[in-house]
Length: 152
Image (cartoon, rainbow, N blue to C red):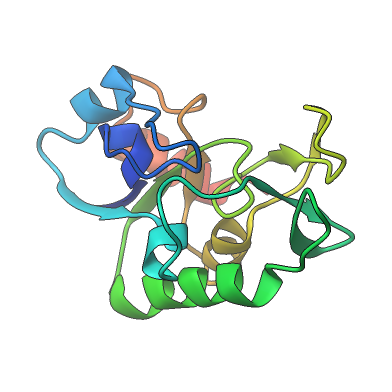
C-alpha cells in the first residue's frame, strides 16, 4: 500500500511554527507501507517557520491580509504531480493545505469550520481516499479502506 502522509505527522519540523505534529498512531500504521511524506508549503518553497495562513472566502491568506493562495496551490500541485498512484492519504487536520474535514475560518481566532485544505481538496477530487490523523484507526485494514472508499 502506498500512503501519502503529511510530513509533520512523521515528526518532520515543517509546521508553520517550525515544529511538528508527530503522531505515533500514524507512524505505527505506516510500518509495513510505502510512505510518501509531503509538506505542500515546503514544496512551494516557503520557509520554516513561516507566517500562519488560513482560508478566507476560498483563498489562502495571511493574518495581515496578504493573499498567499497562488503559492499554496502551487505547493499542492507540486505534491500532486510527483506523488504517483497512492492508495490512501493521511493528512493533518485543520491545515489550510491538508485539512480533510475542517479548517480554520479565516479570522485567525482559532475557530474551525467545515472545509478542506487545498491539497486535501485536490486529492478528494482525484478519487484518493483521504483521512486525517484523528480518523486513523490503529487496526485499519484492507476492509476498512474498502469501507472508507464506499462512504459518500
